[in-house]
Each structure stands twice: as structure tokens, then as C-alpha cells.
Amino acid sequence: GGLAMLLERSRQSLNSCKETVVFLKNRAKVEEEYSRSLQKVAQTTLKSMDRAGASQSTQQTAWQRLVEVHETLASNRMKFSITLSEMSDYLSNYVKAKENVRRRLKETEQRYQKAIEDSEASLEKARVKYELQSIEWEKLLVKTSKSDGNNQANSSGAQGALSKTKNVSNAVSGIFSKHKGTTQETLERMGQEAGVKTKMANESYKRILQQTNTMRRDFYDVQLPKILASVMGLVEEVDQFLKFSLGKYAYTYESAVLADAITLKPIDGVCAGMVEMVGDIDSKADLDTYLQTAARTGGRVNRASIPYREYEMTAVARLYANPKHIFGVPLDSQLERDHQKVPLILVKCAEAVETYGLQNEGIYRQSGQSSQVTKLRNEFDLDAEQVDLCSSSCVSDINNVASVLKMYLRELPGGLVPPAQRSTMLGYFPADEVDSAGDAETYSTHAQYSRDQDLGLAQKISGLASAIRGLDEPHRNTLAFLFAHLDK
Image 1 (cartoon, rainbow, N blue to C red):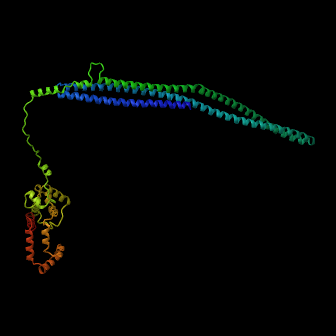
Image 2 (image 1 turned 135 degrees about the vertical axis):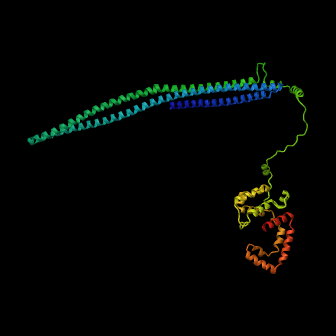
Image 3 (image 1 turned 90 degrees about the vertical axis):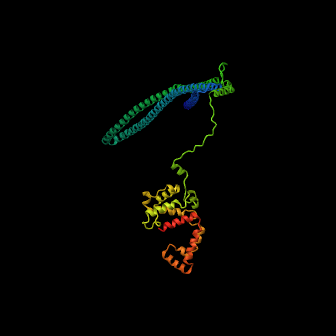
């Protein structure tokens, strides 16, 4: 119990040393990084001052001296970092050595304990063997004693029988006396052998007992106290060395801080401190010197206004920067913006259809490819003037051109015919005729009925023409162009 307690205490002391090693390493790393960073800043500043080639004013001189002070501070911190690293390495090696000592002491104690345990196990085996031999010997002794008593009783009975029948008695007595004599000798021989074995087991038991007790006395009276004293000395030595190391660290740290303080504020009274360096700056004298130098070397200042220089963008960039949207833009707004009478998309699509698509059946009923239609839509919505519908990709499927034109007309705000004129035009046709306009046969029937029962055809044409004339110029021109195209 006491040795285990001291071993645990020594482990705690060594762990404290290990924690101190880690601290010193990390602190040395911090100081090294700080020193290098401060040195780098100071050197960079001095190089910058050299490249600038500034005049040696009082401010410049003071600033250079201040930077040089920082170089000295960086050097002091680097020395402090090196000292901490050396302390850390030395303490680490010391801990490793003392851990080996602690391990050897622990292994020594375990070796003695193992030897004692093995000896006690051998002693227990010898004791058990001795007891078993003793019990066996005891049984044989008791059995031999009982056999002697039986032999005496048998001898008396045989003599009484001789007086009556001598011949028969002699024969029987001879047989039994021979048999009993043999059994008795065997028991006596086995008893002697058991006695010898018991004596040998007893001597072995005593010998192992003496060895075990000698080993125990040597361990508990001699070896264990030595081990305890060694472990106790180890604990005291480690604790004292850790105290010494911490004291050395404290002294080194104080010395480093004091060195920094002396660098910042020398105590010899000869060198100036940082406050005195700053106090030597004469800003007024520096300004006067600068103005005099500038007056001698400077020229006249150009006071003319700086002209504006616009950046010349490429044609593609200008196109993307200022797109001319047409989809979803009111018709009058886009025509006024583009200075056109008819939308360019309508003109270009109509020309393409009339050039490449009049021979196609269902030109405005069949839909084009969605991807190609979307591509054409994006091109027209960027700048309709730049779209070329004569390319092979466009004329290969004229339905794409027709579909983008239909999409444009669908997305016109208010439609190609404004709502007011559209209502007037639809008023010339019955509702059921308008609903069934998609059926040619039904439309023909309703048209016949319309000519017979409703307004006359001439009245319808006159009314529709009047409604069209009521459109504003952009819608009227566009509608006229579209009718002329569809009439071809």
C-alpha cells in the first residue's frame, strides 16, 4: 500500500514536469513567432524607408530610431525563446531519465513480489503433500495395529481346538498362520515406506518454509525499505527539480521583461528612450524644410479642367449593356424607341417566311423546336437589327421563325388590336359564331345566317374598316403589314 502510494505520487510529480515541458515549448514557440513577426515588420519598414528616399527630417530620423528599437526588442525575444527551448529540452530529458528510474524500482518490487508469490505457492504444494503423506502413514499405522490384535486372538482359538482334534487343528492352523503372517509383513513394509515418504515430505516442507520466510524477511526488512527510500528520494528530487525549473523560468522571464524595459527606457542616462526620441521631432522645422525644397524644385501647376474620357466598349459589350427588348414591350413604345413604323421582328420573319416557307403546308399551324424558338426569341429580344434569319440554322425549319413571330404577337401588351377596337370588331359577329370560328363548316353556316338575319356584309366590312381606321398609327401600320403578309 505504501509503495503504491509513493509510486502514484512520483507519477504525479513526473506528469507535472511533463506539463511544464509542454508549457515551455509552447511559450518558446509563441515568443519565436512574436520575435520573427516583429523583426519582419521592422525590416520591412526600414526597407520601405530606404526605397522612399525621404529627406532626413527630424520625424524621419526619430521614426528610424523607433524601428531600430523594435529590432532590438525582437532580438531580445528571440534570445528568450532560445532559452525556453533549452529549458524545455533539458527538463524533457530529465523526465525521461527519472521515468526509467521509477520503472526500474517498480519492476524490482514486482520481481520480488513474484518470487515471494512463487515461493509461497511451492510452500503450499509442499504442505499439502506433507499432510497427505502423514494421513496415509497414519492410516497404515492404525491398520497395522488392528492386524496385530486379530493375529493374537486367532492363535488362542487354535490351541483349544488342538486338544480335541489334533490333526485337523494342525492343518488349519498351519494354513491360517501362513496367510496372516504374509499380510502383516506387507502392512509393516507399507507403513515403513509411508513413514519414509512422510519424513521426506516433512523435510521438503520445512526447507521450502525456511526459504520462503527468509525471502519474505529479506524483502520486507531489507529490499522493500530500500525501494521505499528510493521512491521517496525520487519524489523529493523530482519536486525539487521542478521547483528549480520554475524558478529558472521566472528569473529568465523577468530578465527578458527587464531587458525590454531597458531597451525602451535606458537607465544609463546616455541613450535616449522612445519617449525622448519622439520628443526630438520638430514638426514646424520639418514643414519649413519641405516647403523650401518644394519651392526650389517644383514647377507650375496645371489648373485646367480635366476632360471627360468615355470608355469605348466593344460592339458586343454595348449590345449586352443596352439590350433593345421587344417581347412584352408595348408596341408604340418599342416603335418610337427604334424609330420604326413596323416591328423589325415582323418584317424579318415575314420576309423569311415569304422567301423560304410559302411552299410549306400549315406554316403558322405547326410549332417549331422549343430550343431553337427560345434561341431566336433571345436574339430578337437583345437586338432585332442584329438577327439574321437567312442563316442555314433558321431556314432549315421555317416553323421556328413562324413560332417566334406568333410568340411575339401573343406577348404584346394589350394584343395587336387594343381591347376597345377588339370589342367593337367582335360586336359585328354573334357570340356563337365567334366560339365556333375554328370549325369551317359551322362558320359557313353561321356566316350564311349572319348574311340573312343579322347585319349585312357591307355593314360589317364598313364597321370593321372604321374600327381599323380608329387604331393608332403603330397598331394600324403593323396590322396592315401583317394582313398583307398573310394575304400572300
